Amino acid sequence: MSKPSYASVQVGDEIPSLSTEPITRHTLALYCGASGDHNPIHVDIDYAKESGLDDVIAHGMLSMAYLGRLVTNWVSQESVRELKTRFTAMTLVGDTVTCRGKITEKFSESG
Image (tube, rainbow, N blue to C red):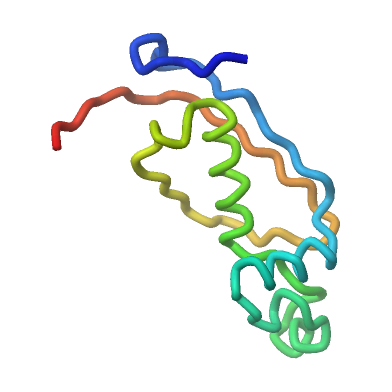
């Protein structure tokens, strides 16, 4: 599949979605090693329960990495200048993450 050019992208276009396998404890342990984020809230169920949660939660940056994959599956990495997100909920063990996107605005910036 070819990557779209800036000129071919239109407001309202949808980015092809990305769905993950269910999040597992193994996924979280691997991400701890890859990211260097060893916060026990992501891998230690006792710590998570002491913190008021039922179970460990996924790293916010893991969710953001999935969004990055969504975008770079669609356009080249060199085309991405900025990626912003706002976290509105926790990603739990067993959750399947589905990422979707829609073009809401086009603009160019010099420099």
